[in-house]
Structures are given as C-alpha cells and as structure tokens.
Amino acid sequence: MMTERIPWEQYFMAQSLLLSLRSTCSRLEVGATIVRDKRIIAGGYNGSVSGDSHCIDEGCYVVDNHCVRTIHAEMNAILQCSKFGVPTEGAEIYVTHFPCLPCTKMILQAGISKIYYLKDYRNDAYALQLIKQAGVEVIQVELTDDYFSKLLINGETNS
Image (cartoon, rainbow, N blue to C red; front, side):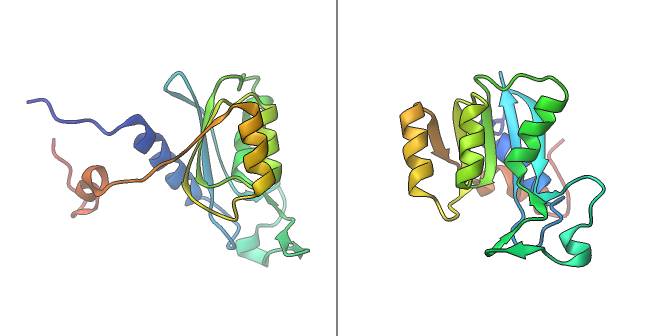
C-alpha cells in the first residue's frame, strides 16, 4: 500500500524546528537548515559563541534591545558550511522565523537561492527589497497536522 510521504518543504522545516529546540537564547528560539539538492548540508540554532556562557545559564546580554551574546541560527548554519568547506551557492535555507536584516544580507551573499520560513518576525522592509533585487524566492511554509499528528499520538507511527 502506497501512502503519501511528507513534502520536502515540511520535512526540512521540521528539521529547523528540531534545531530550534537546541537554542540557548530564551528571547527567541530559532532553527535553520541549509539544503542543496534535497540534502541537508548544515543546520544551526541561535546560541552563544562556542566556549562562552549561554543566555539560558547567565541571562541575555542585551544592548540596544538586542542580545549580543547570541549568534543567529542562519549565521551558525552558514558558518558551519564555511568551516567545513561546503559550498552554499544555489542552496536553500529553511528558517523557523523570517530572517533579520543582517542574516538576510548574509544569506544573499552566501548565494542561497531560496528562503523558506515558518513564522513572520519583524519582517524588515529593506531585507524584503534586497531579496527582491537578488531574485531570491521567499516561501512561507505552513506545517499541517496531516504529517505530524501521528507522531504526537502516544509516540506511535504506522509501521
């Protein structure tokens, strides 16, 4: 019997949601997954620089209403690619929240060709303008119960 498989957009966004659960900043839990050719090449979540204190342990370090202790999920994922020599040109990114302006600029500079996001979050007008100028497609993903409800019912799946 053939059953419908989870669509790629929902699958990769679910990966980003899982990553967001690792976030160490209590102000906003964000996850990002970078994908090329339907394969995950990197993931990130917002958290502190390796070796530094975490917001969840010592509180946020807020300057001008921004937590400066935190590296954003998108930046962490892109830096992971850089660290390990994985090209991002033509890749897609799945983010739990619409990227801020600095992350948008980084995404565009990295050559990422599509931005998928789950939730609107202070969508910046200039970021939207830059995305349009670059010809990068932006898609808001809606997760549906069709694919996730069976995981939540007593942990049972159809085997």
